[in-house]
Image (cartoon, rainbow, N blue to C red):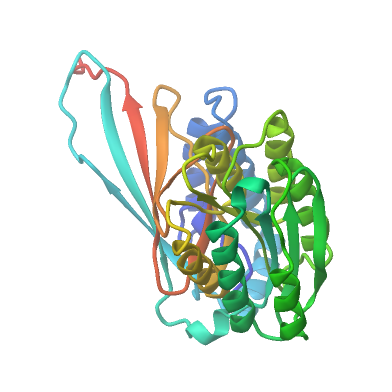
Length: 360
C-alpha cells in the first residue's frame, strides 16, 4: 500500500490533469477555503493542504519527481475509500434554517489480507482498585485480565497499573514473555482507597510511552467504577497530549456511579471507545472485544476534516460504527479513532443550512 499522499485527490483532479486544470481546481477551492472568507478551523486546514498540493503540481519539475515517487509507491492502491450520503439531495426553498444530515462512511479496502493488519499491541491495562471495586467487580476484572494475557503474543507489549488515591505499576511495559508471572501479579490486586484517576493516567502514560511508535498499536484500557474529583481538567489535558502522540484511551465504566460524560470526553479526545456495563460478568466480553479490535486495526487515529461554507453550521457529529459514541467538535480534524480491516467506520454529521431564497 502507498504511504504517499495523493495530491491529485487533494485538489480533486485526475493524474493526467493539464496545468490549466490544476490551476482552475486550485482557484475554485481557494475561493471557498481561504481564511479571509471562511473562518472555520477545517477550512484553514484544507486550504493549507490544497496550497501544498498546488505548489507541487503546478511546478513541472516538482510534479515529475512526485509522479515518479507516486508510481514507485504503487499509485492507485488505497487502504480505504470514503462514501458520503446526504439525508436530502434536494432542498426546499424556505425562509428559515434547515437541518441536513450527512453519513460519512470510511470503507476499508476489501482486498487487504486481514492477516497483514495484525500489528503488535503496546497495551497498558489501567485498573481502578478503589474500595468500591471490592468483591465481584474486581474478581471479574482479574478473570478478564487473565484471558487477555492468554490472548496476547510474545510480540505484544503489556503493562499493568492499578490505582486508587495513588497508582502502582504492577507490571512495567515490556514484551510479554512470562504470562504466568503476569497473571500472578493480576491476582495480587486488592481493593482499598479512593479514586484519583489522574494518578493512574499519569502512570499509564509513562508506561505506554516506553514503546510507543508506529510499529505498535498504542493504547490504554481503563476500567473504573467511580468518579474522580478535582482532577478532571488535568485528565482531559493529558488525554489530548496522548492523542497527539498517537496513543488511544478506551474506558469501561462499571456499575452506575461513573461519570459517563467525563469518560466519553477522554475516549473521544484520543479516538478510543467507552463502554458502560452494570454486570461484572460483562467485563470479560468488553476486554476480549476491545483487544481483538485493536489487533485488527487497519488504520489508527483516523480523522476527518470538515470545512462547510461560511453560512453552514456543523451542529453535531456522532460515530455510529464501530462503537456508537459522540464525537467532539472542539477542533479540526475530528478524531474518529480506529479503522478495522473488515468493518466500516461511520459518522453522522448534522448540518444547519441558512434560509434559502429564490434567485431573482
